[in-house]
Image (tube, one colour):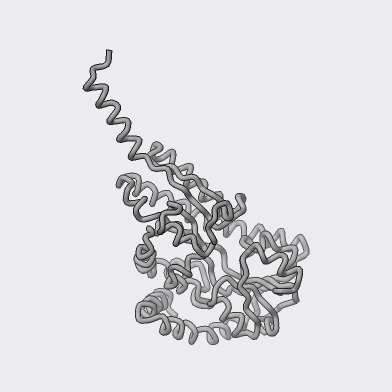
Length: 324
């Protein structure tokens, strides 16, 4: 027969353990389960459940399966609608993070790593103001130019309508005589078919993986990089034990790096597959990068100045880190 005091203690202990276990709702902007990004998010969920002994479980939902617009993911996490997410479209809620995406500012993997390290604390603080903990992230390969028309220099953009994912990308297109158009990813295929747009800025392992049949030309000019932030609701994160918090951060750091690496491999694989399918891939002309850099550098300064001293300081920090 169970002693009543011991029995009550057992019930209390069990209920306490149950209360400490957290079951999070996760979300990603990507609606395709086979992408490196979604596979990585699912690995995070699997590892978290296993390596915390069930103290934290995360159910990851694909894009469009919850009533959350892609542009609202950071806000949804801050509001506690979801607890955990990968957000590619964070810049509307955390605009200072756009520094990393300014066209022609960061042009190589090495520059990206130095710039991100210089900006990391600024980003952590900016997300915290939204009620969000920045845990890490991953990066897509460089955003290059895919078109329905033949292109072998930036001058060929003149008069053409190009889909962009940020005002900063739009400025690049406009500086070379094109018209920048913002559309959701789901609108791209029909817009290409109807001539609403004539090209997109994306990666071979990104949008071009799904839209390549509409885009017979790829000009391998690196306009900028796109990245996703992996974030958690601050209150939900604070409620975790210190050990679980630390393990979650470690897992996100490891898997974020793995996603980035997988995208780089996939970029090469997709380029080969797209070439085999008939896409014409043209390397960037030698003189285009210096011209583009000269055109866009004043824009970096004007952009920061318009947004205030914090942005000017952050831009100066990044430029110092990468030597530009």
